[in-house]
Amino acid sequence: QVHLVESGGGLVQAGGSLRLSCAASGIIFSVHAMNWYRQAPGKQREWVATISSSEGTNYVESVKGRFTISRDNTKSTVYLQMNSLEPEDTGVYYCSTFRMRQYWGQGTQVTVSS
Image (tube, rainbow, N blue to C red; front, side):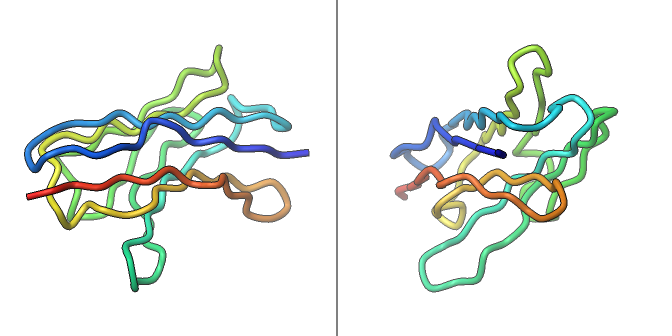
């Protein structure tokens, strides 16, 4: 049973930082790629970042240089460090992984005020 739980969202002013966490269970965490997505109000869910089992990373162009995805296999947790936040980063952030199908956490709200 795959279960993902995000945390760390909140309200921050433009230019500020947040670190999101996603705790995973029900998978052999160390061999799975992990992903972050976000969904802004009225918009489609957007892929944000991926970290592979070998810790290679990829980011959507709009967050490159500002966001960093990382993982701690001893804690079965993936993180998203978000710096220099902009109002356009506002949305619900979800982590996900694949095991036969794509699994999603419940999301954590990030709100960036100008």
